[in-house]
Length: 309
Image (tube, rainbow, N blue to C red):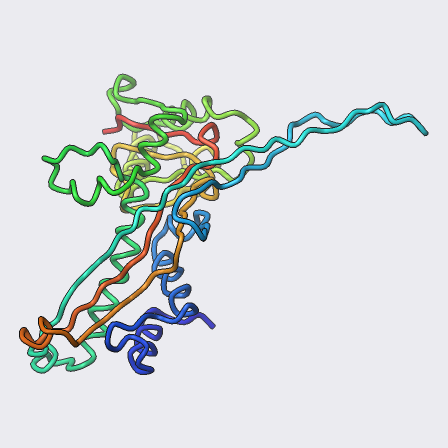
């Protein structure tokens, strides 16, 4: 039976593993990290790699196609099918989420001591949401004038990587960026057939999905007829994933397992009620530590639609 983040935190506090700057146990940390990610629509579907070193390589192994050959009884013609190997570099960026509570808040709040677990739940749920946001929208070249500079600069996300290495369908000069059936099929034309194998997914914001539905309803009103439920949910016979971290002007096309979140150590949740500052200010201090890098295994298997209105 799955263990909730609330239960993990409660058990850690009750058993004393978080007292006086303690840590979640390895088992708790693994569950905590996994379930923080599983609360997000996209993050729970991508591939997760746990590595020992903070920097290194992830191996890629593949084979070619049309490698069958004729057999001649008792003869070895020397032919051998090749195995293609390569590697993707990763470099995990350490991040943290600190917060504090005053003892007065704990005493006066209607939830009493339970407010500690409630706030910890909220903070750790936000860790998952922010990780998905950074995985998509991170950009190390974000200008310092951007209000979210300190967040976005942490790492390059999948969108930036797709813009630089995947197939890009810019709709800003096509139909004035408006939705239409051509949006999907023009993107699919750029994806090699070997990747169009049933594992591809459209990834879009909730509003973009609603814009697609609006377009179909307008077509039904103007021209009559009925549109099947499958067309609403699966444009071009490809299912959709709704992702609130994605901007409304973009749609991604890829196999979610082609997107990788790499961590070099499990999430650490620490707490302390000791030390001069804690005593003098009558506070409890908390911090979540972990690290991550965001990788695309095969850019040629990905597409991104931009310029939508």
